[in-house]
Length: 93
Image (cartoon, rainbow, N blue to C red; front, side):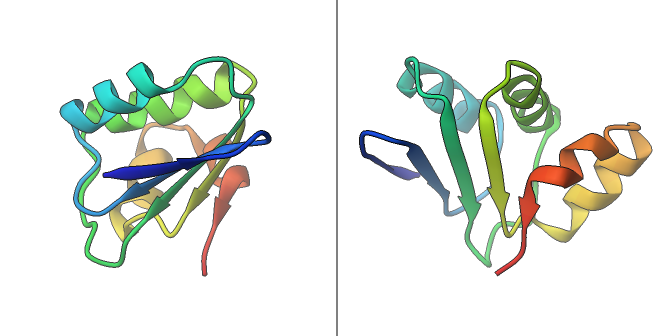
């Protein structure tokens, strides 16, 4: 995973799966940023429970969250968990 930071936002690039270790890195890297973008590469296919928990908590914390190109499984998971409000911050490229 890599990230870019400017004065207005921080953007994380997920090259593999969003799992526990990746969520630890994101949490450790985030400071007081309000604008957070998480972009998945086409090869990302999996988000574990910690990944869903991270995305939902960032959203609930009031972060300006944008989730770009999440894996197909993501839509199914948020529907099953009744977290459809996360779909408001999803963007497909």
